Image (cartoon, rainbow, N blue to C red; front, side, top):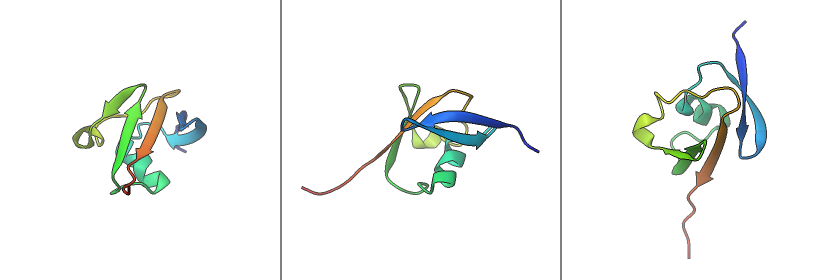
Length: 70
């Protein structure tokens, strides 16, 4: 059985496999491929870094979805 970690995702507890990347998180929550900003511990994670940025126990992650309109 693989190890699990828990992060805070938009203020809610979210279990993840250990060594999960930001891209892994986006796939788990169904947000991959969407126009979304990812902030981990108050740092913006650019799209080109999401596959290599690993999440750790207790990280605070905010997913901000861009909405169009006017």
